[in-house]
Image (cartoon, rainbow, N blue to C red; front, side, top):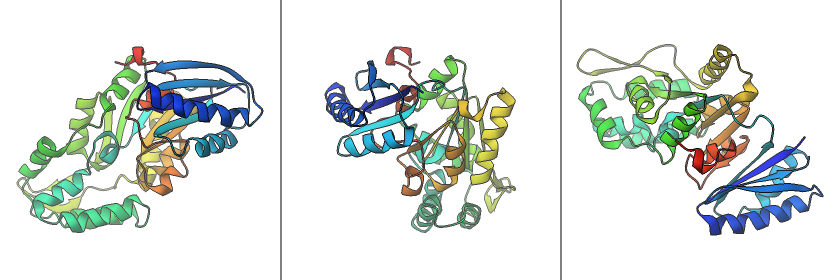
Length: 295
């Protein structure tokens, strides 16, 4: 089975530094390097004749750990995916919408602390969400639009990721433990075909402090991956999932390629690849897209 190692760095010079170290690591396995292909100014593929994915990941990871570069090791066949499921908060966008809403309610510090523990896997997601939303009771609905307008920003590369995959026939779905008020807007802005999220309950003027049931959490994200794949008629090996928190872990582990984005340690340790330095176009490079194919 031929493998491909993809390296993504901030520019050509950083790529060359990481590439030299990675090639030494590959050579140490005794496996032959088929060829190297430049994907963009800071990205390259290295095709390797056989080997064991986990072992090569470990060797390359150790070799480039001091470099500002991200990498992915996977089978070369089937790397371009037909379905993308992406978390929203702190993945496709740069903030946690619930924490920002809490700022308007004057309880950001308390809610952000619960968010951090839930995303690290220290608290059950559903209970943590219910607790956080309860503290927003009485918040004027105008705060939702204000939060979106003033604080929600797409992470670099988010729109390029979704629009490029869509242009090549893939389906892109935003799946969030956050709220549909935000996912509907972010999905439209970034180019996702659909979105799934939780629903804040209101009385027509203010939030009641309740969230609609059932709550979309870790298992619901996994269910969404399976349902979307089945609807497309694709195997899970043809899917890509990306997220940062513990509630993303089930879908990340089930996807053909699961990517940890600026992730909590529990997620980074169990994902197929992690992105700590590059922007979200790294997920395109991992699939073999060259920069000239970006939408």
